[in-house]
Length: 486
Image (cartoon, rainbow, N blue to C red; front, side, top):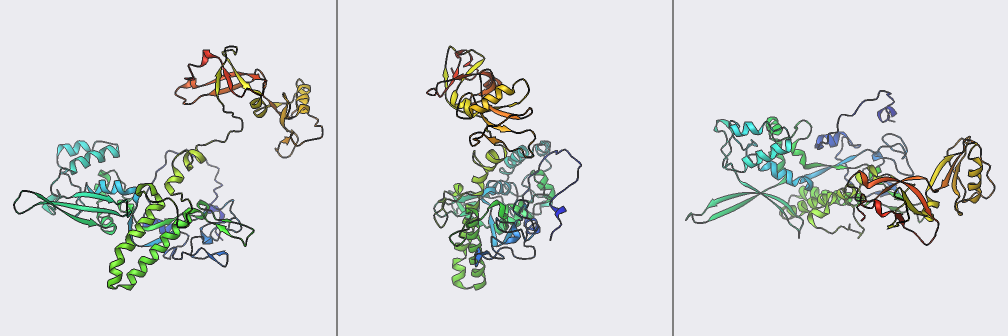
């Protein structure tokens, strides 16, 4: 059993966070943090063995706790287990489709033979570029210089390799991702240019990027100690822990399970990797013939895992279910960032159309009675308002003005008493909190999108429109301009 101190820090010292750095995990780092250390990672595509998660599979108990079990790594239940990633040792390197533009940019800046940067470091222009502190802007300027180079400018004439153009092809029909080095030569009559393409396989590109010196890495805006350029090529595939892709297992129908779509895609990656390994072991003419096909299929599955939109492939998995990739889970209004991290749950909000009403004061907003009965205001019971609040509690939640919930002051738990289900009479005590319906004079915040300036959100006094047929906010024409509602 792992010591709980590894996962829970009881140190009372509070420190300020200065910043967050995002790095690219190398193959060694992925293996080091894997819950299956000392192995080739996941090599079994099957998920279950006699209705239990299969050891060495994608639902291995070492990767985290499920609803009906505890984690085999930290021995915690689902509530406390943070999850533990695993890995897949790939049969051969593949491109990470998200990094293709960056890989191409770096290859255009360096020599494909010696990995030296393709600029003369002794020129005044280069020395001026080094003064640019922003890594992105400095890289753009160096790339502009490198694209004009004809031969490698390595000191002491050690290389002198002819510079070639870098071509990236992502074929929409077959979803192949290929990078080429393009040589331009003149024909014998010197009248026309001839182009020769040489494919740069992922393993070749990884070796080229791995040979970039630490000095050139810094010039290009990269930290070779934290994020090696070669880490943009997958040699070891990171497998997220089980809490990221939970398995839904039922108690009925024989305990059938419903797997997350990420698990399904990872299964296809494991199967493709197994085919590649078997094809290499066979080592026949027929296996060599199919080697490229298997390689492209493995590349396809890893690309679909990250972002199917980049290769315009169907978004359904093998069973026809909707597949939600890593990118789709992060971006957009319904992604992890905007929905789960930045999103806030609001129990005291209402949204409807606004209507102009000249009879409403400029500092007021007309609110439908239906909204006023749903959104409540917590008012503490005192000796001055106990009679008023008692009457509101008697009216209940279905009559206006009334109340929806009551919090008892001496209660051990903070759960409210729902008046909708409370049939017997409730006696209020001083200190209790009554969540009453909105009433005339209550102050609320009103916002109309797009919120372009501070005046897009202003405070107004409530004027309840006690007519069930009217369901819009009533606003004075005098205050429509700040809301851009005129």
